[in-house]
Length: 267
Image 1: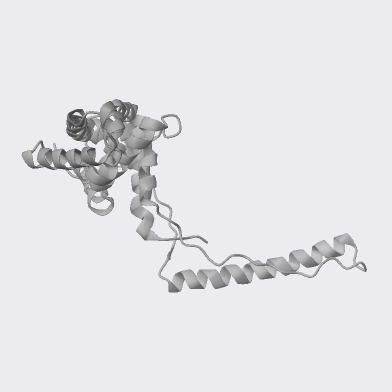
Image 2: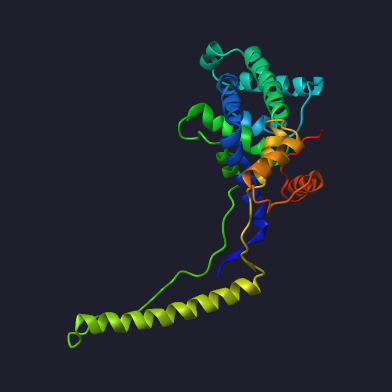
């Protein structure tokens, strides 16, 4: 018997999408790494890059005069406040151009690999900062989900108590007694905790088939046609048990987009 919080189901699909990106399209990860030098240049010139300009990376951006005015205003004011020693080693104009260039490059990266959803933008931009300074530690795209800090519900801690071994009992008798007592305790704990999970609205866990998420990666990133994807599905299951049509494939893709906010490119 297993329970799950279906509020976290989108997270499981998103994790699967990122894992398939790593497996099927490693060029996405490599392309993100090419943004590390621009990120470092922008971040070294303005230490509060994520906090002050994060919103520019979390929604689709085109070069606008408003963006440039805002970046120029914030950076210029900050440079007026920092120490003369710092100003002597950094140039405000270089920092302004570096931030605007990073916004543009990040948007190109998002567009190239069809990653235009809010959670992907948010996670990938913060992953970019981690990859820039700790490249070996964060060498997987699924780290982009860490920024959300999802936690899993759980029952009360298990506190099992049993009297110690009596000198009058053999070790075999003591082990038999404590095992029987623990088995009863464990059955009662599971029954009680399961009842609490159900009252809190958690559902019995069903197995999720996340394998079909990889076909979305082939469509979005590898630009493989749906007919070719159908052929790949047939080749992977010669028995024909997984009969699927373009219409069915489209329905899967729309579900991924509408329920789990996975990206979906057009034609």
